[in-house]
Amino acid sequence: MNLRSALAGKTKTVWLWLGALLIIVLSGVTGARRMAGRPAAFPSADLAPSQQSPAQQRVTLACPGRIEGASETVNVGAGESGLLREVRVREGQQVTAGDVLAVLDCGALEAESQSARAAVEAAEQARIRLARGSRDEERRRALDEQVREQAVLEQARSQHARMSKLFESGDISRETVEKTKRDLAVAEASVNATANRVALVNAPALPEELERADAEIKAAAERVNVIGDRLKKCAVRAPISGAVLRVHVEAGEAVSTLFPQPIVSLADASRLRVRAEVDERDLSRIHTGQRVAVTAPAFAGREFGGTVARIAAQMGRQQVRTGDPAEKSDRDVLEVLIDLDEVDARLVIGLRVTVQFLAQ
Figure 1 (tube, helix red, strand yellow):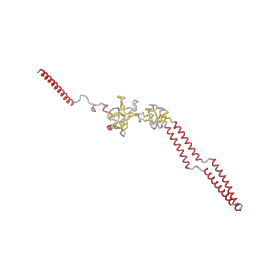
Figure 2 (cartoon, rainbow, N blue to C red):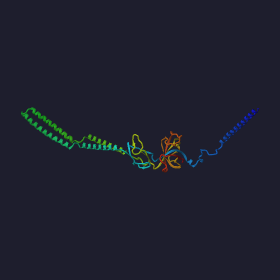
Figure 3 (cartoon, rainbow, N blue to C red):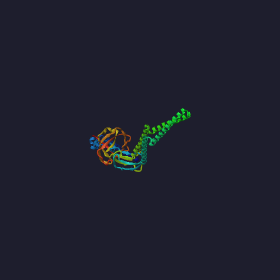
Figure 4 (spheres, rainbow, N blue to C red):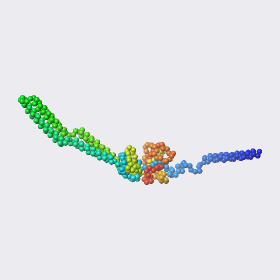
């Protein structure tokens, strides 16, 4: 009986504790509901415009971008295949458009150029020879032959006349007269042939022969020009004025036009600009002439002013990566070019920055 009483007392005590705990939990839930209807004791993250700082009030949009020069980076390659004889620039050097950046070894092309110039000279001499006609010796020989054949003709004509008279008087046979007649015909033919020979050696060159000679000269000269243009490409020149950002190859390395690779990278760093990428959802917040503030993680607390100079006319894929793993790489963006107010040596080309578009 005493055991049952003790167990009953303990059970009653447990139920009392459970009831008290239930009352405490219900009281906490009721208090939380009442507090939810009251204002918070600290400001929320989304403040009203009047509660934001001046810096927060003026930023209407922020997006990533990169620093670039007045021109895009130009990767200068070789226009001819071969070995680099020398590289005449170094990184950071200022160059002017037309300056020689590197020189290729083009010894084979130089030899080919000399051969082509010799071919032009040969074609020109052949044209002169053709226009001049036969040699003087050939002309004199043709005249001598003509004089000799004319003398033979005169002799044959006299012989035939004499034999004809003898035949009429009956002193010789018909056969003898016929023989002198044949000799006369042969002599006349020889005189005609030598006359044609004289006319041939004295005749000017045919127009089609001169045109052919001119065409050969033109073809040879064109080959010289083509090789000359290739030789000019052996000197790699700067297409723009700017700074050498990087030298990719050194003297002694091979370059090829089949597998092109840059030799030097250039950019006009006389003034700086930012190429920003604005999401398509934020296009209504930007306009040409809008002021921006550019910040970089490398320069905390430092802002660089700028102005929107140009807005692209076509959407494109994102090129500037922020490094955020959650960033989407397949979204469409619009490129915006921003002219910076000043050139700061700390803003190197290619630096990743954040562009804050300011409200009017």
